[in-house]
Amino acid sequence: MTRILVVEDDADLALALRTLLGRAGYQVLHSPDGREALRRLFADRPDLMVLDLGLPGLDGWQVLERTRDLTDLPVLLLTARGAEADRVRGLRAGADDYLPKPFGQQELLARIEALLRRSGPADWAAGKPRDAALHLVPERRAVLWHGAEVRLSDIEYRLVRTLVRNRGRVVTTEQLLEQVWDDPVGVGRDRVKFAVLRVRRKLQQGSGRHADDPVEAVRGLGYRYQEEDGREGGG
Ligand code: CA
Image (cartoon, protein in one colour):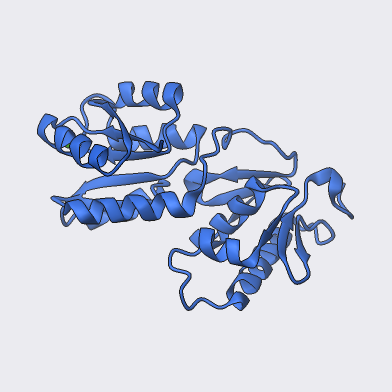
């Protein structure tokens, strides 16, 4: 069962969210403040977090920052209506989507479904290097590649994340379209190819290592992220 952590101090809104999400078939965990939210997050490892920005004690920004030190689970921010600056800051800080209050129930459910569909299982070791050469930095939509920070677009970051999560296995072009692009309808297969080329170029420019390419094209099928010891020309 998909579990959603709702971080909201307003008791009425929290109850409404629990009821709505529960009826939609999700298991709902609730935290009324930031510190308790971080405890729940680490202890229960939910699949998605709905995070109110205005919280007592630790505010939503601090919760988001600490969350991103640990995991790349999808985060939907609840912001005040019209607070455009919050939206931009939220997306930069690593939120995946935002919804201004008050919001419609159907819109909330649709956004949650979309986030879950495109994010896959959360990586709870996002803050720790697993491949000596490549390290995801979810809070900045960047990767560390041979120690150099390489900034990526949203699509490019999701592409790398998807390939890294499936390390060693081929991910088909269709799977990439489904998991990386928000709305793959009408998006051609060439878009995947060009995004891979952009990622490669950025990695090479960032690190100055032109021989070491972790993204392998598998003809007619898709792409595969190769671990460091499976790559040629590394070292
Ligand atoms: Ca609040």
